[in-house]
Length: 205
Image (cartoon, rainbow, N blue to C red; front, side):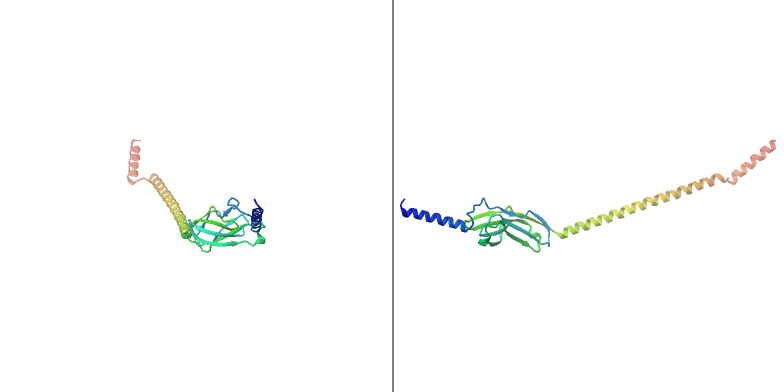
């Protein structure tokens, strides 16, 4: 190896060292960790945010948001050179100011590292489930109606039972009074037979 080749090799090494130092560090896909918001369940009309953060100090990245593997948004994240040594996560936020049931799905955040070395890393995804507020209100109304119906039915059963007991008591009292009156009073025929028997006993004496 002649002197010129050695000089070229040395200059190449110096240039590579300078680039790595200038762009913080040479990164690999194994060192970049992309974290996303856990799965969420909301009602339509609410406002929610889901985030995507990556734990690596990278000068420039491009973030792609996909819904069910369909591209919906992208943005460029540029970190100033003076903040590269700070241990801070870089994040991207997807905002739903008035979410609807059509927004239900799996959202994946894809981070593309553009400088110093191109890398492409995805998060695990966030599943958003949107339920209808009307369905919940209807179910609540149905439960209220069922409660009122059961209460009225119980009241009617208690009223019917009380009325039956009252009628039975009246009937029983009337029956006893009739039996007592029948036992204490004799008919004219019974009185006449009694007089005749008494008169016959008197004659025999």
